[in-house]
Amino acid sequence: MPDRTKDVKKAEPRPRFSSAEEYEDFKQRLARRNHARMFNATFSPASLYTTITLDNEHEVHTFAEADGIINPFWRRLRRLNPDAQIALYPGRGKTTSRIHFHMVSNGLTEEQIREKWDGGTIIRIEHLREHNYYNGVDHGRDYTGLANYLFDHWTPERGTRHHYKGTRNLCQPEKEAATEAKREYSESKPPRAPKGYRLVDAKTNRYGYMCFKYVRNEDAAEAPPPNNRKRPLKC
Image (cartoon, rainbow, N blue to C red; front, side):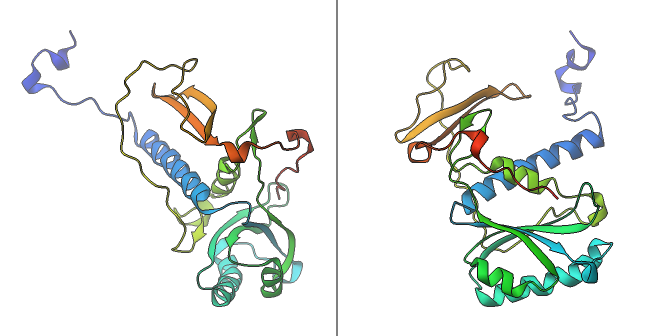
């Protein structure tokens, strides 16, 4: 028996994290997961995904300088539609190191976005995909891959812990009360899919918990194979 448990009254709880770095990593992974849930709850194939770049005349070298250009653009969009849902992600290009922005929005048109941006070139505006493939499996309207890609644009250089700028009306996922499992489940024997859903993934996470993922059947209609789809444009 370990010394720490020989006398229960004197026992001290085992620290959950071995270091401050491990705790910080845990918080980042939790924030990344919550961001993906918000993203999936807010955006759909009706949403627009926009990539915004700065031209030579407006090129900046710090994110503080970039705020001076992107914030007026943000306000112009908000005046067009105060109810628009917008998430904006600044980042640096991996090859050019130039600052650029990705934006996902509801309630704005392509024409409005192009008209209000005057700091350079909008190199891409398109609707989010109806079908998203992970490991060759169609996950329908699941944008976790894109959400994580955008979330990871953050760098300590930004000088803030906020990974993105979002309007206050971004949706939060509905929370369901936990239910007691009445059977023994495993990755090979998952729970029966709820009506209208189908199972697309079953795995055990790093903490030993089993995770089962379901998508709506209506999102699983026939679609082109993953090799025929366009990949996200990375700056």
